[in-house]
Amino acid sequence: MEMQVVNEHDVEEVKTGRGYTKFLVQHEKGKEPNIMVRIWGPETDIPVHSHDYDEMFFVLRGEVEMGDKTYAEGSCIYIPKGVPYGPTRAPKGMHLLRYVEGGHD
Image 1 (cartoon, rainbow, N blue to C red):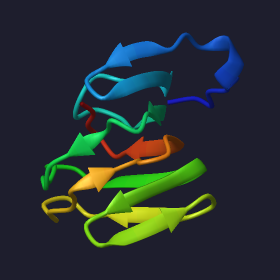
Image 2: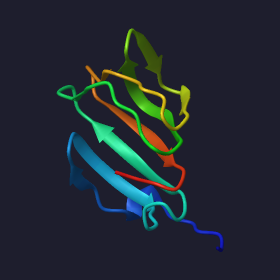
Image 3: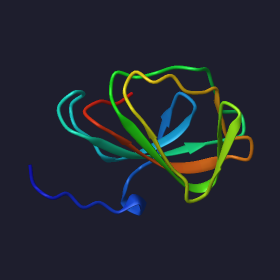
Image 4: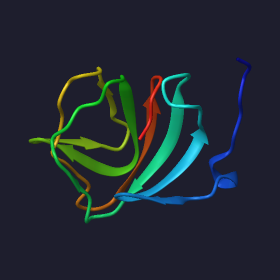
């Protein structure tokens, strides 16, 4: 694997289930890490769930609610594989950087 560099402004927003995603670094699921910017609006409401991979969120803009906690801009949230989290909401909308270790959805 070699170094990859991408500017968010050069990447198209793709409509995904609960908002938009900018796929910055994308690999085949299960092979290499994937890095994306997720853009969620106030209608975002994701039920409690877990994944079979580790993931990390970094809140770039706005706030994200996970369960009974609210994480503000600048918060880094690490979620190990198999750990349930949520419900997840973004009542004022938000942008976050998502790093997924060897998986994506």
